[in-house]
Amino acid sequence: MPDYSDLRPHDRPDVRVPVPPVELDAELRARLRECSACILGVGGLGSNIAAMLLRSGLLTMTLVDFDRVDPGNLNRQLFFRDQIGMLKTEALAATLMRIDPDVSLTLVSETLTADNVVRIAQGADVIIEAVDRADTKAMIINTVLRDLPDTPLVTASGLAGYGSANAIVTERFAERLFVVGDLTSDVREGHPLFASRVMVAAAHQAHAVIRLLLGFPDP
Amino acid sequence: MHVDVALFAHLAAFQPDGKGGRAPRSFELPDGTTIAEVIETLGLPDQPRVVFVNGRHAEEDAALHDGDRLAIFPPVAGG
Image (cartoon, rainbow over all chains, first blue to last red; front, side):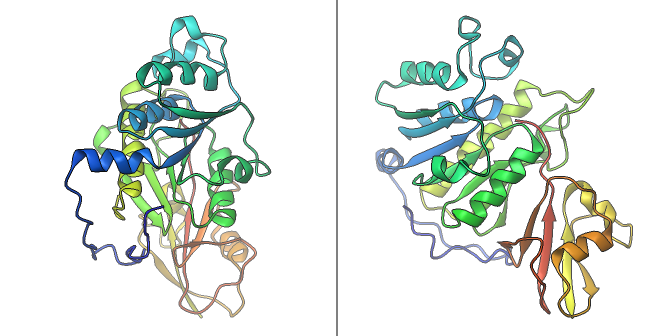
């Protein structure tokens, strides 16, 4: 685990701590190779986050999703027409294996509840919230912050619609909580999920994870 | 006691001054006031939310203390 002892206080956004010296691409990827991530939800956010993390060198992931691939997912999620009907965890695992056969995956095809989040996510170096429902997001954030307080959590809120991609940012809300999104754009009638904006948020989350695991305390 | 209260996203509209924004507002509250009582006083909707005190997660039945910084964040759907 990276050393978080020098994290800046949440109430001092003006203070920047020195970044650790990191020079070599190989060294960076070697660090990521030793880390693990638990991705809660592998839909629009999670499927794309997993691919980005794998391409960045992070080889150990737990993929969690109860759902199966639906035709309506193909407009933004990393699945293919011939995978319709498959469990999302298994379909994504097949794709990730094609990207890098050295990937090490744990697949959990369960509905997330307050009773199983800790069992599923404990042990990961970082937890990524990538579900769609607001109540599930709140449950995950509340449960992880309460029961796994030492594990960083990267969550997303506000990525629907056709608003500017520049409104999506990564913020640090608490010592171990990083929030990606514009905070307000929820999914509703006339406010759908576009692949471009979802992937902007997914890229923010993936990059926040990479920075955290490399020891950079600021998003 | 004095407590700073920051409301994020659409909850900012529930700040008593009606000006919105996430900047914290200072409240004068009776000693022992709980987070749940602040939520009720502000009239926040019964929607999913996450509560922090001084940058750390807090339960809504917890009592606040003088100088605390309360922040409430409502996640929205989409993923």
